[in-house]
Image (cartoon, rainbow, N blue to C red; front, side, top):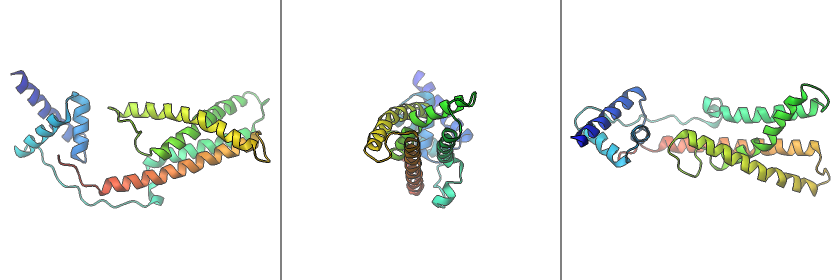
Length: 214
């Protein structure tokens, strides 16, 4: 009796998620049901196939998708992170060069943006360039993916900034404010641009893949 109730619960959850969330692929439906019920994917797939055979849900092939060009993709909401990263980096550089250390209280804005600029942005852009759509470790929820990305960004920034300083030490400019700010700005913009290009490529490949029907 308990097994029958569990099967009915899975079926109702599948139908509810299919109606409310309208997942585009079977894989998305399986993930959403798994996150809600915390059950193995195989059971979910078996229930989906059973519901399809009974005519309670209908699995359809996705229509061909129009592949967006990169110039169009950067204008979408999915690319907001790119413009935010570049804008914050550029704003920080402008603030550093225009607000002096004795200009209170605006100097606190300089301190705040400077901390983000040094401790987060370079690492974030670098991690985004390496893993544009998903971090390497598979996690059960998107929130944990975000937390892991933030942690990796902080750690990578702490690794990249000293390397930049070391390289500048062997140049005619030396370790001074202007070379450091411009170097980190260039580093962030370059890594972010690489990341958006790779992200766009991953989206294209994902769109071209047919829905999984296991």
